[in-house]
Amino acid sequence: MTDSQPPLFPVAFDTSADQQLEAVRDAILADDPHGEKFGLALRRTFDMLLDGQHTGRFRWEELHKTEKTHAGTLVEINLQRAFGFADGDEMDYSIAGIDVDCKYSQDLGKWMIPPEAMGHLCLGVWASDRAGLWSAGLFRVAEDLLTKKEGNRDGKRNLTKAAREAAVNWLFKDAPLQDNILLRLPQKDIDAIFASRYGTQRLHELFRRTQGRIVSRSVVATVAQQDDYMKRIRYNGGSRSALRSEGIVILGQYGSHQAVAAALDLPVPGAGESVSVRLTPWTAEHGDAPWVELDEGKWTVARDGDLEVEAPMLPER
Image 1 (spheres, rainbow, N blue to C red):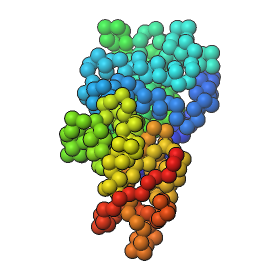
Image 2 (cartoon, rainbow, N blue to C red):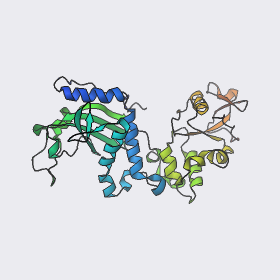
Image 3 (tube, rainbow, N blue to C red):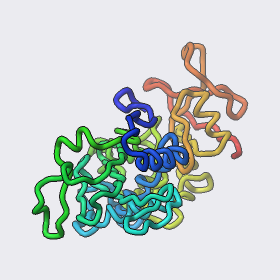
Image 4 (cartoon, helix red, strand yellow):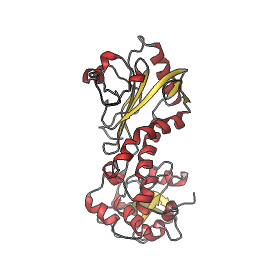
């Protein structure tokens, strides 16, 4: 998490004026105090829309208009699956026995509110894959919070600017979304990664060019575009074998790999994640650089001037 991304914790606000809102807030935060379920559901939504394994797409701009329109429905479905919300009587969900509508927008706060939501609680959600952030807040729909009555042809209206700034009671604000590293790479790296017609070769290039950074399962699927994409990382013909001669190891979610990453001060991969890094034998010239024992030798993260040597085998998972 960078300095520009705040810690993942609920945003405090006064709920004393709306006991139902307070009950819904408490129920959500009791189930997801740090926003992990929210974040994973939103990451899953982007991955489902992009369908990188079958399309190679990784940018929101590559989606068709109909797919973008479907995003709100997928957010609603994935949040309901993640939290196990019951169906509402009139709105999307029943949370703590209270009807709650769910709305998603790519523009923060610009949710389209239908006439039938008047007087009900609304869970407003925003997420941007490009920004790597998401937010979620609660508000009760009221006439004085909405734009002019005409709205669109379905009678849907937005919150006014003043309402967006004052009436939304944020559960989480600008929380980090699991990163899509393909959006952070220079175009020359993207071109090099996707240059080969073979998925295995594309994966090799991905791990050469993303050393020291978390690579998610969905990114691997997008680059490989194969059904057995995670197998393409392993030894016995996968990227771990192919890159070993270049000194590169690929750490995965296994406990032994996580211990290596932590010892070397690298990002620790979580479920479905990988981190590649070039290693070199540790010598006194490396000074206080962290090292780890592998294959009965001391290894550290290679510097630009270190010679390229065959990497050690990683420990069994």
